[in-house]
Image (tube, rainbow, N blue to C red; front, side, top):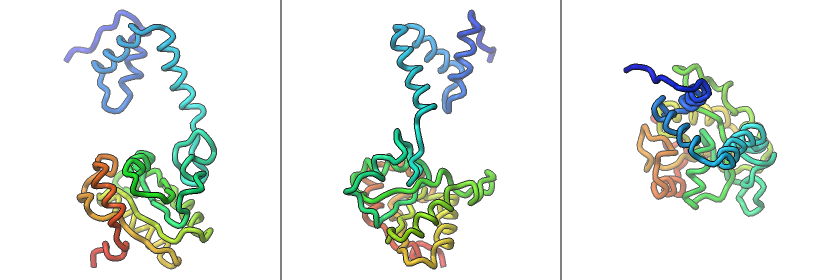
Length: 208
């Protein structure tokens, strides 16, 4: 396939930037950029300003690592949430997925990834130390391991369990209504909600 020939270097540079987005090829990027060129300048300014503010002003919650506009996210600052239950997830998208089920009222802890030796990601690359410190404060009574039902998710869950098994915290795992190999963000809300409600003790999920 021949490369695209651009009548403008400004157009080409913008298409190149859009094409860096996941799932966006050159032709899709060109279509998006040409769409922006048809919009009023004020709309494009609002779009670019939103991106700039997102990148420069968004924060990570100091308590759970969730995305937030403030130092402490709206979940961690909610006094009606149950601080005795902590749900450990891989990413911010998983927090959003579980919140959409309306079946969980505790707090979260976002690891920022999963242990994956094949990808060069080890325990030190994740926020596991922060999780250990949070549990050491003594408020948490139950930790729900809500990681994707993949080899990486199971490896990470087991590592954290071994790291904290001598504490008095009860460990549970979401029910296997989430099939092995599934990513949490692609699981429908009803299935994910049932998996949270029907969670089981983590020890019972380990292969003997």
